[in-house]
Image 1 (cartoon, rainbow, N blue to C red):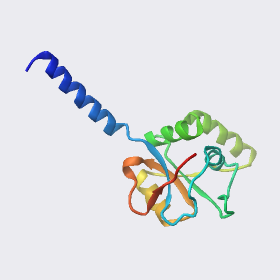
Image 2 (image 1 turned 180 degrees about the vertical axis):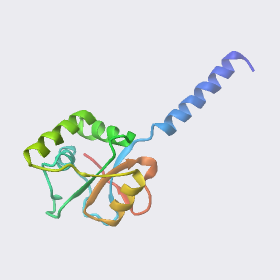
Image 3 (image 1 turned 180 degrees about the horizontal axis):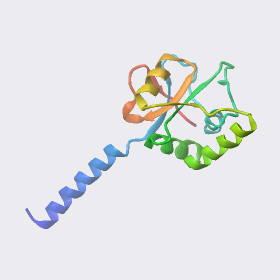
Image 4 (image 1 turned 90 degrees about the vertical axis):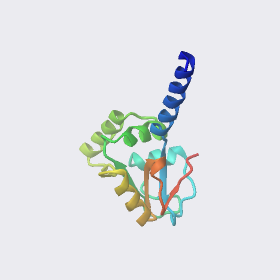
Length: 141
């Protein structure tokens, strides 16, 4: 096998592995959630503590992954346009002034998926490869 062939094979393998490792973070709700979609602004309002109800008036329960998870940083950067440090600073101010508490942090994606699947008022995020039965990917407009 020539050098060019080995290089092409290695490149193809790298791209395949990169695509597997770089799966996307998606927003999820329970299959029986009344939410059909959310605007990016409404999602930001929910996760930054400015809104506590769904558009239909029912309470919303946002769940967060631990700060050390890769999905945590991906979620905030992709959907809210903020770094984890900016989000932490936001919540530090609200907690200090007594105006709010951050979303409940769950230990891992499996726990988040289980809680969201069991609660039609919950909203969370997981790696797209982790979407399982009982969850529905929520379109963010």
